[in-house]
Length: 254
Length: 295
Image (tube, rainbow over all chains, first blue to last red; front, side, top):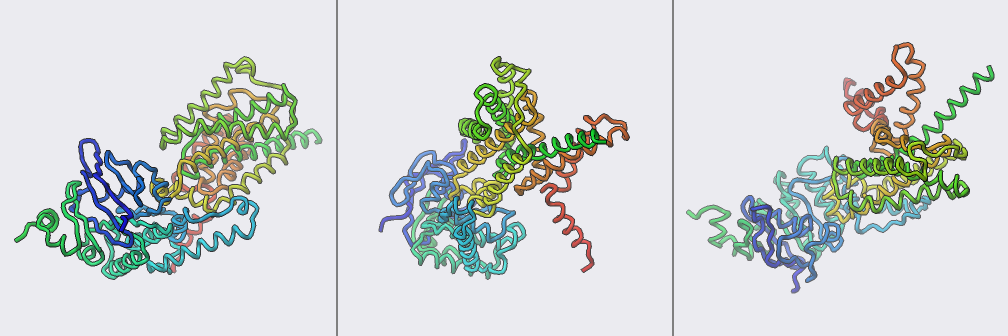
């Protein structure tokens, strides 16, 4: 199968710090791919590279075998990559629904002329955008909170709005940066189910997560990063048995 | 008696006209504020609109609607080469670069003999009428109002709240910021032309740094979150000095300094207690009442 995302010998330096050091792996369509590693392993830097927030120092990022490194974030997004942020970046003064409406930006094609002339088509376009946003919020279990400003939502709710906002662009590749951090157990269950469901729709998920149980449960394959280098790759059970991983991440073997 | 009435009408008419002109100028700063950019080039764009229109009227004798068209388009086109480099700057650096643009225009005009330097152009025929100002202001407000709640309006709000996040939603933030700078330049140029053909004259000292600060204060005091906030701010702060003029002798301060004192005080109060501007006052009062009610 042709990988949806392929990273080749990816490097990124910040001054003297090598955050990503020759990372290489691929993510297949319909796959949930876990990206784990200790704090400071370069996981978030790697997601930032893929989404175009900064360019790699060297190496290549290929989406559908087309290079995307060096493209501006909005161009990467237009190719079907959506993401959430580790340090939640919702638009705080917009409602949950309007946050998701912003996420639909790439898919909406309203006519400026219709809007200015107040044609009925413009109103129905906005209406359908809102209905769709409400449906996505229902999918993440927030149908009662659609009108609440993002800043007034709980931590777990904000994370779920972020997932809904990312899904609103109908991405082919979804990058999730610690989507369950700070969530209750029930919320984690719901997000795990949602991630599996997204993958069955044929989309790929690249999941950065510290909750090892969740990663082992939902991921098809896992890549382990340590000091910016890939130290192990494979299925959850393979990675779980790898002595290098056990040493670096899960603690010294007793 | 008749004289008193006429003189009252004269000053009243000019205040009414200035409410509209200042509202357009406040909106020209607001367009960039609406996507989180503090661009202060509006005095420069207003100068370009004012001088271009005055020259076309005086030297070429063009019909007024055509003159206004040029006053809108010329600054808008010039905003492109300005915006491409300076919109890469953030926050106060963007403000400094755009202030510098305004100063370059002003100082250039002072040293340009063709437009009579510091003296400026005089005896411009009065072609602006109050209804024109308000018609054009209404058109500007209509366009800004229609943007709100649309895909483009949400994109602007998203950029204002978190630009990198907006980019990862696929929003080309650079294009949006440039478009709003261009729109602001067009509004400033229009206001400049309307003013030039209302006051019979244009001079470089009408487009100083203080002028653009006034525009910013209109927008902030009125409220830069909503498109009609700058209009409310411009109206309030343009009418206020007229009221202060009567008050000044009683408190023993000259009207000019009193105006600055009151403006500064108002700006301080608004920033401290009404960060969303005067237009948010009713909502704040409701919230305050709700918080105090016993239930």
